[in-house]
Length: 259
Image 1 (cartoon, rainbow, N blue to C red):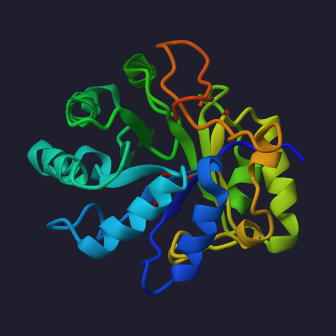
Image 2 (cartoon, helix red, strand yellow):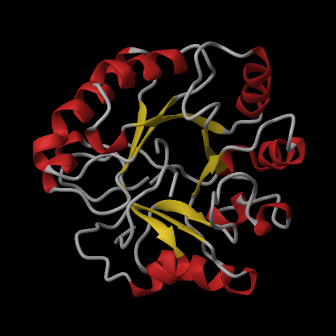
């Protein structure tokens, strides 16, 4: 069955849930993982997290650091400080969660994205959880336009989304995971996730399907060939997905990849 490339927000602590990290490493380049140490990078570099993330990096997993923008209400200096703290970890970019959608709030988002690039972390993904104003498309960054429940996703019209956008869908009954994955494809998602986990936090462990399909490259393309991950599109062009590879629509806003 065709599936979109996986972007997996993961807040499972490497000591509390070592199985999750082992399984993710087994998926290798098929996964892009958003790592969250403590609502972001934490106050300083943690050797335990560094070691765990280095193992994923060595396995070919693309890593993004979690940064909470809080819909533009956080001071830019605090957000930028989080970005620079992530530079001490083996991440290739940052996942800007709860980004605003108003054109009047784009300034801080653009500043933080530029800071990430200057810090050697060029892979930047925005997660407003709904389609943003068209001005955000000019930044040329992958955008998650849906971050919500399966129930919301089925009702969602997809208005304002583009092919290649990200869709994060949680609280999917295990027997409907395949249906949710097919709906992502049919709606043109370029990357994302379907998970059976839900409230209060759908990203504290892995979706049920992760341990069942260790070679997700099979679902993303040729056997043995890494599935593509979201990449930077050109402004006002169709998104493909996070870097060497390449989705449409949203109902709910991100509640801290969130969700």
